[in-house]
Every structure is written in structure tokens, then in C-alpha cells.
Length: 471
Image 1 (spheres, rainbow, N blue to C red):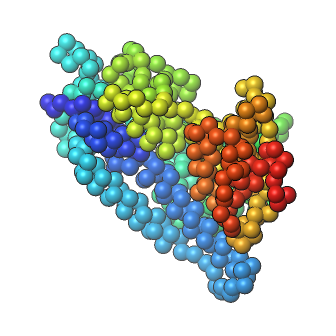
Image 2: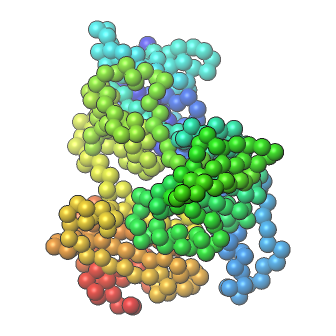
Image 3: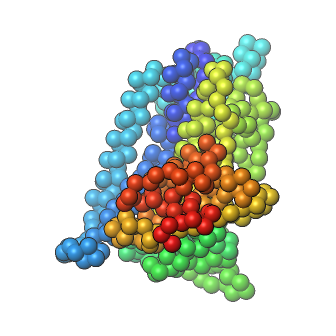
């Protein structure tokens, strides 16, 4: 039996970052991972999907060469080579994570971990690890961090990995379909719609709710829907898919969806089920810990430091409702610092930047206009279009806008919402403003270099008080 200050279950973005931070703080840390360190984000999510999206973006730019006074003939793509590039990027980053853990002295144990209930001999319980070789290792920790992540929801639809897929399966396809039906118009669904469309795939998106991107500001979501439809992406909202109707026949998938009072049949080469993710909380003994509480969706209930109802167990990332890789990482750092006895700032969800890597991109932080009003704030709103920004004209990407929400009484920034070129790269300015409790006036006083896309922050901030210069 091996003793550790902390055992981390799950080596994804939250788990490995937590382990590294713990080791930096002088804690003896073990990281248990049954697959590959790096987790879903690195191997089946953020990184591979963005590699595909980058290739799609470049292809789109090449097709517009004439707009920039350039001549590009016989423009095409080799999806096999695109796939191989994705695999190389993932492989390089995987090696980097492995090296990082080794450098910091984290004990990495490959295998499936399970919680053993506390006893008089081990008051905090044990972690039993079954290795790939079939050997059992027992770990005795002072604290345990659950970082087991999430998996795609399926709505009860039978996934065959060939014609009916989740996003995990889609990333492993080495060929493109001719047509696709995407169930769900959230972040993942819209990113796949964007990249498939750029590669020439016929795309239909079916969304149950009245609008796409339901977690984003309504004006931003409406703008993206308009721009996606301009690209001939077929988006149908208010569409209730019947899971039992999904069939695969003669190399084609089909399903029924009720739209209003009408039931329509849709068919395509593949169906991509993209209706969110659910936490991985079963199969490793967590159900035997009676003090663990759960919230809506089955996510583990935690406080701002990652603490659960069981004093020996913390939970971070997707399993606790985080939903984003950078949330998991930040929560992992906070949890380890709290375990060490430091006094980190408690995690605040409304200060998390969110990014959608469609074309154009979407990024936001803080409250939407509707959320701010629902919380009782009297708000001021500043909007500014990208078409007026010089660098956007230079880039040839002028669609979209920035929208800042401020407290009318104090001027404090309540939220920032952007749709346009490369907005994911500079949303952190608004994130910093949220952390510092900055006002729209202070953002407007910040000198934004010209010409840059980030100038839109300064103009939108000035617009909050009707002082925008270029509009």
C-alpha cells in the first residue's frame, strides 16, 4: 500500500493540472488514469476539433484568394492529410503532458481506480487501482480529487460509430460524409456544422429549443444563425427528434422530427448526436459515499473550492458541472491550493470566458443582457460592429459585433458578448475586467493599439455611455 497526500482520479485537463499544482506545492500526489493523460479535451474534444476547424478556416480563406488580389488555382483538400495532422498535434501535446507530470514528480498510475469505503484502519478510505496487467494497487490518500469528466449524451439513440455518431466518433472518422444531420445546436453542434460546411458537406441542424446557442446572448445567437444560414446550412429550431425513429438502412441514416404540428423525416449519410454531455459518476464506488450530494443533471455538488459533502473528497471539472477545459484546470488549481491550506479565491462561474469556434467565432464572459435584467440590475448596453474596425476590413471578415453589458448605477462591467473574427483570442480582456470589477469607462480609457481587432472593446465600452468615436 502506498500513502499519498492527494490521489486524483482522472488525468484530463482538470486532473493533470491539479496534480501538477499539488506537486508544486510540495504535496505527494498520485494521478490515476485508465486511458491517456490529457483526457477528453486533448484526445477527443478541444484540440482535435480545433485542428479540423483550422484546416476548414484556411480552406475557406484560400477559396477567397481573389478578394485579396491573389490567384489560387485548383483549390482542394486531402482529408486524410488533415486527419493525420490532427493526430500529430494530439500526439505531440500528449507527450508534453506526460513530460510535465514526470518533471513535477507526480506519480502516474495507469489503470481503473475505485473508491474503497472508509474504515477504522483508513478513515479517509482507500483508492484501489486495477492495472492493465490485472494487478491491484492500493493507495491511501489524505484527500481525493474526483476529475472523471463527462461523456456524450445520446438521448437513448443507438450509436453505431459509423452512421450514427457522437462527437467522439466523428473525430475518429478518416473520411468526410456527403451529408450530415446534427441533433443539437449547442456549442459542439454548431462547431461541427461550421467545419462540415466549409468542407462541402450538406448540413442540417435540428434543435429542440427556439434558438441556437441557448447559453449565449440572444442577439449573438441570432447573428450566428443568420450568418450560418447565409452559408446554406439548414438550421431548424423547435424540432423535437424522436430517438426511437433513428434508423440506418442502405448506408443512410434517417429520423423523424416534430416541427410544430408536422412530423418530418430527415435523412443523411450520418447523424451526429450533439445534445450535451453527462458526468461520469458511476462505476468507481462514488455511490457508496453517502455524504456526496448531486445537483441537476447528476453533477456532483461542490462549493467554490471543490469541496463535496464528504470532507475527504473534492470534485472538479465536468463531473462537477464545469463543462469547459479551462474551468476544470482552474478548479483543479483552487482545490489543490485549498487542500494545502492556502486561501485561494473561490471559483465563480459567471467570470468564466466561453468560446465557440465557429466561423465567425463567438466569445463571452459574464451575464447576458437577459440574465443581468433577471438578476435585478438596471443595465446599460454598448454595441459596436466589426465592419467599422479597420483590421476587420483588412482581414476581410467584417460580420459580427461586440456587446458590453454594464450596471447603470455603478458602471461596472456585467458581461461581454462578441461574434466576429478571432474573438476567442481577445475575450480575456473582458475576463480580466470581470476579475478586477472594472467599469465600462475604464475599458474605454484603456488604449487599444491600432489597427487591431481588439479595438472593438474600446469602442463598445465607449458606446455604453454613447461616446463611441467611429459610429
